Image (spheres, rainbow, N blue to C red):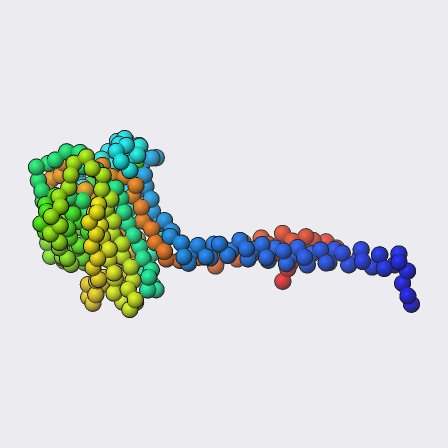
Length: 317
Ligand SMILES: [Ca+2]
Ligand SMILES: [Ca+2]
């Protein structure tokens, strides 16, 4: 029987809630997809910061994000020279101490994956010693993290949590010959450059002809990238305008996982006064959310959709 215009309008109204619910479900899926796209894209291609500290929240005698490895205490002072800004971490004359920071593990799995650490440094007074200078290291903690200051000697025995670490360290001295060095640290966290043997095996040393000038800010960096053969590590390390590259091969490849940062402005004989600032560790390794986090987000979408006419929840799937 042919329906009247009134009946056809009533039929249309009756089907509207279902149509609306389906449309909202599909919209929610579309919105979720749009929301996830930049997230996934960012995790694959973007540079992610896994650690940073500009010391802006540090009290004068406390380090928020670092542990001390060495007998000398450190202090935070204001210094606005060059790229230094506000608070900076100050090493006193003669201080034999490194600092260590832990961060979420980064594993280099695919060719082109990299991790890079950097900081800015300023020396304001000489110690009269040239066999010292800044170091920067990246380590694999091997599952045992330092979780409190180690106030023993920086050139002495390390606690068990540090004695198993594996990593690489760049060092620039005040000398102009044999002054720029890449170390392999296969016997634990090595705060100083002069402890010999496997503690500080030399991978490469360069005569740069350049010393270090007082009252000048330099950037120090160490970048480790998985090579095209998925086995070697391509390292780029720099101090100011000096840059070197080195490919780590064979048994020198100690680890492809890094979760620990080591810094020492006076990694040799007693140093002068130094300030560091703008410490950062970045990587291009993916940081896609954990499946559990995705499930929670998806659950929110499913159960926030409008209720069905009979009052039951209306999941989209
Ligand atoms: Ca600062
Ligand atoms: Ca360890």
